[in-house]
Image (tube, rainbow, N blue to C red; front, side):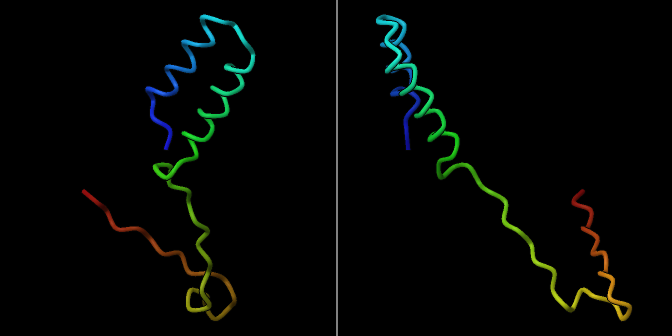
Length: 67
C-alpha cells in the first residue's frame, strides 16, 4: 500500500522540478492507492433458481430496516 507521505514527497519533487516524470508517477501512485486493498469492490450477486416464482419471474427480496 502506498503511504500518503510517499505521495506528498512525489508531489513536492514535481513542484520543485516541474519534471513530467514525477507528475506521471504521482498519478500512477494515486491510481494504485485508490484501487488498493482498502477499496472494496462490489461482487456480482447471482440469482438463484430458488428466487424464481412459478411463472419464471424473480421474487423481490426486501432488505430489513436497520434502524
